[in-house]
Amino acid sequence: LKASVGRRAAPYVFLLPFALSFVVFTAYPLLRSLFLAFTITNGPKSLVFVGLDNFKFMFSDPDFYRAVRNTTLFALGSVFVQLPVSLALALLLNQAFLRFRNLLRFAFFSPYLLGQVFTAVLFAVVFAPQYGLLNRGIDWLLPRSLQDLTGLGLETAWLAKPSLIMPALVMTALWMYAGFNMIYFLAALQAVDRELYDAAAVDGANAWHRFLQVTLPGIKPVLMFVVILCVIGSFQLFELPWFMLNSGAGPEQAGLTVVMYLYVRGFVPGDLGYASAVGWVLALGVLGVSLLQLRFVGGRQGGQGAGRRRKADARRTPPRVSESPEPSSERVAKGWLLKHGKRVDVR
Amino acid sequence: MRSPGGARQFGIYAALLAAAALAMTPLFWLVASVFKNPEDFFHYLFFPPANRLTLQNFVHLFTAEPFVRYMANSLFVTGTVVLLQVFLSSLGGFALAKYEFVGKRAVTLLMLAMLTLPSQMMIGPTYELVYRMGLIDQYAGLIVPSMVNVFGIFLFRQAISAVPDELYDAGRIDGASELRLYWEVTLPVIRPMIGAFCLISFMGQWNSFLWPQLIFSSQEHFTLPIAINQMQGVYRTEYGRIMSATLLSILPVTALFLLLQKEFISGLTSGAVKG
Image (cartoon, rainbow over all chains, first blue to last red):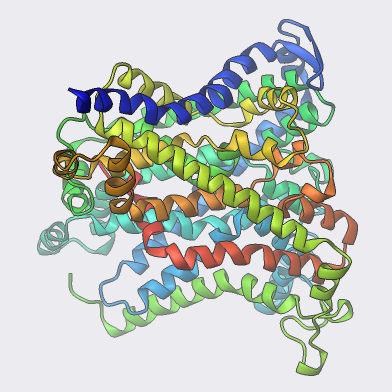
């Protein structure tokens, strides 16, 4: 049978272009980086094997710890500032009586369209002392006495004071990503069963209890997903500080991140070996943090919300017959790539 | 759920409007800033009086800077990468979704594992590879390594799995070749996913900085992020020029988003909300 020969050969042919480029530009570099991590290179031209020296140096370098600390602070700031705001926006937007919902959703989402590079360029000026938009806003809103108390006002040099750099970065990320995360929460909220709210109302639960007992369990899987997305993204922070701090780490290296460290210590001096070593440490760190989160926060997630959600999804995607459900790591990874596709696509 | 009372409705609207104002003000400020002279830049918070509006920032970008070149570079590189990614990912996704073959499971698992790794760890060896291929400081050096998007193949696999098998059976009975099943059956029915993925892929490439910065050294190859990084260093406090370049740089993404908005939102959440 001719047709069946074609049909049997087809998947290999179809997969070939992707598979070839995958092997050359993803699989091979990955293996190679494992080797390079134990070398020092002179650009791409020559290399020497140095054993564990790269790692020894890294773990004795104060700048590396500074980078890890800053990056961790940023990740914590993102999770505990950005996500509550995103969830609040989604809850407000999810009110049934609301008009202009799509317009508002677009308004919240639009900062994301700028991307990190252009957001950072814009906010480098927004944070300018004296006349920058933020300080003008603070000066306009905050009474003089509070300005004196907090030390914030027209003169605040956000990007020149080490202690204010991290808050500035977190605020910028909040502006850019709050509406993006909101989209996920909104989709999750819309999939929560309405009847559960009615039942809770009959039981006399107030709004706060309804939130704790119905909303939160209902959106928990998505919440987990967004948290991990946010953490993984935060650990790869680079463009935001780089473009806000004049192509550097800022005073006292207060804006140094792990990827910036990789770039400045690895690529700038032409040491692909050290860059690879830092890359592996970053990867293992990200992996470790994600696993910890899944274990401690996501461990108890189960049937509760999941079955309910299926109903809403069924409209979009018919259930698959032959396939097992996707492992959660795939969903996590998908979202991560979505949010930070740039660095991944480009490689 | 009952609608909340008037006072609460008012409160909710007030909170939403305040948040929308916070989100939009920097953008409005950006738009206003490009029409200001340097001496007016901080003097007027938003727009200056009509008689002081100026286009000199744009004039400068288009005469003293090869801004058109940067824009063309970005459009060319991004457009090519998006096309390649859509083609490779949808073709591969089709194979994974609608065929049984030896090694399918292994291939899927391998790529799954890759999804969780940060790309920064591969930059070093990729640079070495591109150097050996003689593609440093060439468009191809940016485009070729960027054409694999593992996330894309999963998105397309997911979208194509949802296409009913009957469509393909009917096609085969009509004597369609496997390639035609891809081109004439699959692609038309997954257009929403193509739209969503185009935007995702476009945004990723458009904003890409680290890799282009590493491989491009000649000005004539610069994409917008590298060019703007350079302008920041050169212009320092000539904010009007930098802001103009920023505003022009985000227009293509905005246009594409407005065009593909519906597909994008559903594509964005399809991976997350699904059980």
